[in-house]
Length: 425
Ligand SMILES: *Cc1c(COP(=O)(O)O)cnc(C)c1O
Image (cartoon, rainbow, N blue to C red):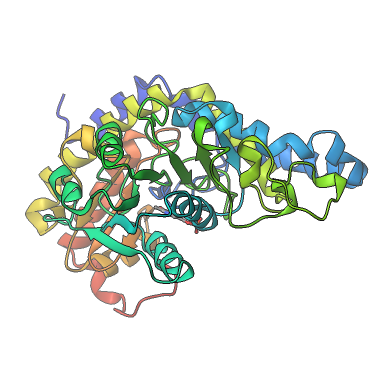
């Protein structure tokens, strides 16, 4: 069968063992191809029903009593369901706050613990918010630290040699995104963690573009700390609360910079002295956003039902398929692949580059007569990211999206869109 035609895509979908999971999501528009699950995951069909129950029964009828009938433990219970997806023990993970806030708390904890050391290492490909948080911490600690940024020679990846150049016996913390947000480059977590540990540095992984997309092995890699968000591949909803991970043996040694009552040993004793809780709870600050936390339940249920290994297997098939279609149809039109070709070094999205990327994205999103709209996302200056969420994306989605891209560039349909950028791209 010709792998570049539509029948091939349809046949792949028919043979997909995970195909029924697509029907477990709300898909209001059959004319829409959604390839942005790496920015905001789709809405699971069970979420609305579940939230109706939480709102009307737990809140509406139970009122404050619901704190004693499930609310108080909910963040920890859902964290325990997330733990196997990231290779951690249930009592090493907590749902709390946002990714940026969790990064602040855990990076602070690491710098505080490694008091004598002055180096912080990250890389040029990291998510800017992560770097802002680190810059803020340098200032907070009185400008004693130096933030060093490992460079990328190809704008896609960073080598072990480059990381090693920046690490020394003075490094307190190495913090990286396990899967890089633009190129989807994926580090060798075990090797990088071992390299940093050799120098006595702690390692904090940002799993935002990895959790729910690739199996993560925090324990097996002996990772110290991790954070990540739940609204991307984990489908927790816009602004869903984030997670944090602290390896068991480190929990009692580290302290959170935000000493709130939910991190206190006994919040309801209302003591005036702060005593950190034992275990992972000490990294909580205040009352969790219960409604948003609850929305994670149907989402994590779906993930665990599908199995992260099965999802990864499908994701590799789909991203490889996307790359081969792009090479056949798009590279001749001026596109370039902006993700690693090696599947072992790639997460679940594929970036392509084109000088007109911004306007091409506009044209993709605009539903033109008789054609499907495609939602990817655009990242400055010339990146189009195509997120493949194996839980609901089909091979046909990928085929049709590539055909739309081809048509838009061949017929220069992007010409009618202005070059001015919108606030959220
Ligand atoms: C999406 C993402 C974030 C988001 O941080 P928020 O605090 O949830 O806005 C942080 N880091 C990385 C690497 C991300 O991809």
